[in-house]
Image (cartoon, rainbow, N blue to C red; front, side, top):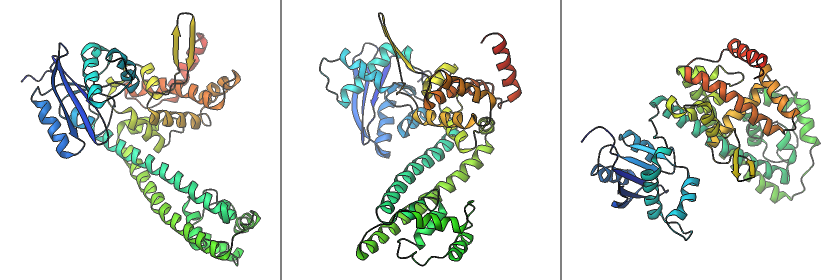
Length: 409
């Protein structure tokens, strides 16, 4: 078998959580094979065996650009073409008049789209092991942060129902100092005799670095509205608080541990150092951008393609004399969140970023719209630095901005 990819066999794989439908067709669109595999080790092994019957490097269409099965297919040497679900949805009327969907029919649809419109999509190139490792760390941390926010909201809701003061004594109810306080004082009754001196000793033991004194903290605790519950209810609610704190503590601890690991990893990667060179990019935000950007330069041959992937440019709909511009929903949401975070932070430390943001606000854009405009502007700079493999140079950027302004750019 040649090492070149076969151009006479097209594979469609309809991904699902538990079972994947697979369809192989030839250059005429006739079905060569059709089967299902489970999403486990045995299922993936069976998938590789069935595909190998038709060639070592097949062209495979799938509705997702990443994931375990995508990584396995790319590592096996196949050419994987991610096709956006919106494109698949829009194509269904070409194959059937009814709106029903089935995994088997979508697998054929994907294979046939690759056969007839394969020139529209680009095959995935495998990311380096460093990028895959970074992505695993970053996405796991992001998922834990989401879990922390949900658990913190639940804890705040519990406290507001019977002890509002404990929810506001510290700035963040999920911070280590706040969780330590609630573990020791889970109810109004447990903190009834709390004095300023005791609170000061507690803060010192917890290495509290906030700017508020023990007197101020105690005043905030006592100034909040008082809850009105019976003794038994208060005791029950205290147990609920202890349980919720017990859930939050390990999440907060693991987020901190993953953050340290990510920061160490970023300093060891050339692209990590590059990404951290941007104003106020920090380490975690830079890691979030790099994890989604990757290190395969061919993936984004232009800054416009990167901007579309990040969702920082709108979508234009035009038909005849009708033209409308709408928010881009279909994008890499993790990349959009990271790049807008960098843009929002950068306007506080970079004069150019501040001017771009303020100009957008002056045109009537709200804050989020202005940040997306600034993010789009930063993506041009990031793409150039990433493509050239050179860290951000404020002097070069400043000279480029000055030249563009002088030329009316």
